[in-house]
Amino acid sequence: MAIGIDIGGTNLRAARISASGEILERLSEKSAPDPELVLGRIADMVRRLDAPQVAAIGVGVPGRVDARRGAVLSGGYVDLASVALAQQLEGLAGKPVIIDNDCNMALIAEMARGAAAGHENIVMFTIGTGIGGAVVENRRIVRGKATAGQLGHIGVDLSGEPCICGRRGCVETISSGTALGRHIARAGLGPDVSVDQLFARDEGGDAVARGILEAWAGPLRAAIDTAVAMFAPDLVLLGGGLGHAAHKALARAPALAAWYQCPVEPARLGDDAGVIGAGLQAMAAATASQVSPQASPVSLPSALPDRGRRAVLVNGIPASGKSTVSRGITERMGWPLLALDTIKNPFLEVLGGGDRAFNRTLGRASYQAIWSVVAEAPAGSIFVVDAWFGFQPRQVLEDHLRRAGVEETFEIWCHAPGEVLAERYRARLDQRLPGHPGAAYIPELIELAKRAEPLRRGAVFEVDTTRAIDFEAIVGWLREVMQG
Image 1 (cartoon, rainbow, N blue to C red):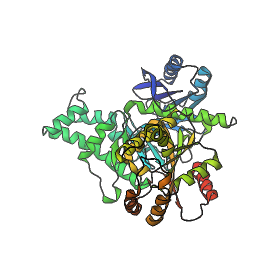
Image 2 (image 1 turned 135 degrees about the horizontal axis):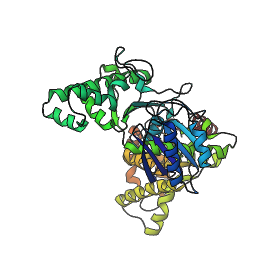
Image 3 (image 1 turned 60 degrees about the horizontal axis):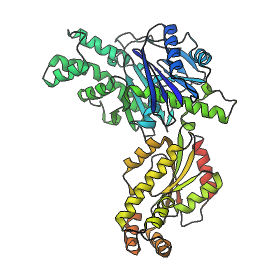
Image 4 (image 1 turned 120 degrees about the vertical axis):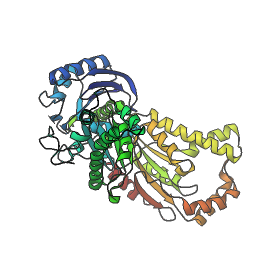
């Protein structure tokens, strides 16, 4: 387990987190501008949540953070640059502490259990008291020399409101929750008017409410378009306390140019994202330090490659040679192999064969069993999974991966021409248990070979199984991509 802490401008949240990112117990306290007061409240929550199974503590901090050195460089409403947060909390708790920008922590959680699962390149804005930002390329946090990803400080109005960073017109000054309050006040409405009331008034034809929403959302759209132009992500996420409202308000502000189109979605985990991501980062750092005791947890450039579980998906339609490839990888790397038929066949032997519908039902159950086994493994485990992943909808796989705590997948795509697959399948008919499709399946298999494609949810290595299989090339590629 780990303790995850999320420091916000309004609330301080803490939770004990399981290895799969579940919240086991949570606490909340009010935030404050006094850093010593914040540190004391955090320390108290850690004492209340601590347990022998807690291996480490992760803290998401607003502002500029050098995660490699474990140092807060600057902040906004809560500025912890003066309190040596990681060192003081580690001394109080007696456990390793890692810190990172709060939006980085939230995005890690969304990749593990939320709206960014399965995506490789993501930009995230968190809309709250201020605006935070995080960027992921190839499932790694982009840090630059230390503090990249400060998307709240994208300039959208050079003569606009002064920002705490020293410039004017940062999107944070116009599209944050604090800015929304200013828009409401300047329109002559009372401070008790909520964003939901603005949407209701707008739907009723209230021009003032619509003007406020447009003034709030338009600069955010410009910042999103800028981020899309810079990073070309698969997805833009809007998180934080006002993420869903900001997403809804963007309907008033469509993308400004065709080049900068990208799906924009609300984050799913809400206020839980920060503590989940912080806990997952802490566990990853603790695991890495156990493997390499000389490495300090706070010196990690990114815990993404080392945290959670990983799976090598050996993918291909029936008779594509994926079982041979899977066994070869397992023999050379020592990773456990989970194959769909290995799970399914004992049940066919005990229960007896059935029709094709029964076989498909048993296949789905075996698929679920595979990911249940993975979910019970220690964090950091690597599995080889042999299956035709196209036999169920893609979302089924994504749900299984999320629940199993699989953070990264690496795909080996096995393929051969349909005629070759038909010959292989025919040759094995007398070796297959009753319940598997028979010779009547061969024409369907040939047609399937024409349209089957890899998942492409991560890095892919293609293997033409009509040729001698170069296992050294396969395992060399796996080592390279796993090391980044």
